[in-house]
Image 1: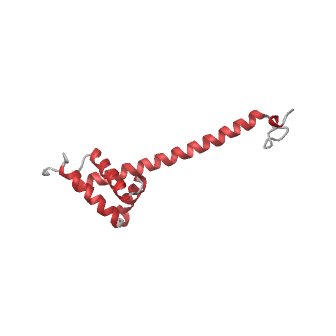
Image 2: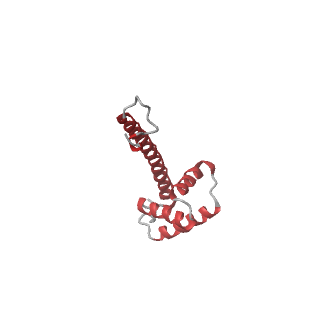
Length: 120
């Protein structure tokens, strides 16, 4: 038996398969946690797009563009910008730099919006 045959984390009575399964369980738990965070973030981004669409009378694609541009121009992650916009609905407060860039991007999008015609 060589030193490579011995796993220091394995008890002498524990089969090697049990350790491999434990490692797989830990890896799967990590992936599930990542997926849960991704789903939550995606939902917040979708909500922020909806807010931008309603505010600017834009299409959903234009709302996505406004959100993305606001993120890029403020150098704030898109998910964080989305969090701020969604929270803005309740708190009524949006950081000045985000508000400025959001307004600018909304203005650009409204110039070409298919939805900005007169209301019925």
